[in-house]
Length: 257
Image (cartoon, rainbow, N blue to C red; front, top):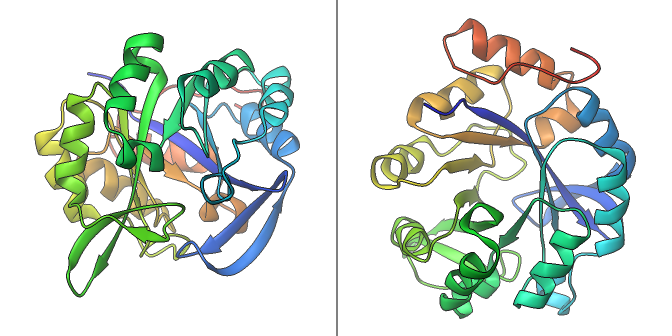
């Protein structure tokens, strides 16, 4: 069985790290992508994720020069996303140093794009990120940074993206983003029962207990953002807590281990 992964997730805007609540409220700057990546690399985290939050709406791609700078400073694998809409952009990001590329909006507009990307670069390089929100009409996926509702159920969409050969699926709750109120355990459990590919749970981590809850619900990995950026919880503390509670996490290998 694969070991569970702890993945810091960083949001990029205009070359800086930022964090909000529910995607749009209470914006805070959170530092430099490169210096922050170096810190978490030293902690020995399993992976990192960098997502440009404006790229899909502006029609731009996440700045590949940031990816190059990060790749020169860290040894951990990392995924990047934001504005990815064609195969050439994926090639550019991978050649800039990224190990995986996240696709969100482009997948909703052209599901075949995921299949084409997986065929060209390999399933292991292609991650589909699913932003979703619950409304009065139901639970639906969103594109363009959480702005446009697609009227598609996230469970159905995750299964479709797995069929399209996505190597991993991230489920990202807009409702829980930045709230530190806990992961969406119900959807994690439903998806983990149906998916064969790794499921990464995102949005809601605010305590050590939230982390273990997500893994017990069936997540293969968890992303953590606000809890790392704005509390005294570190990857070392999370890893120690999970290991002490029977979760099979990877051994720490950073310079602070």
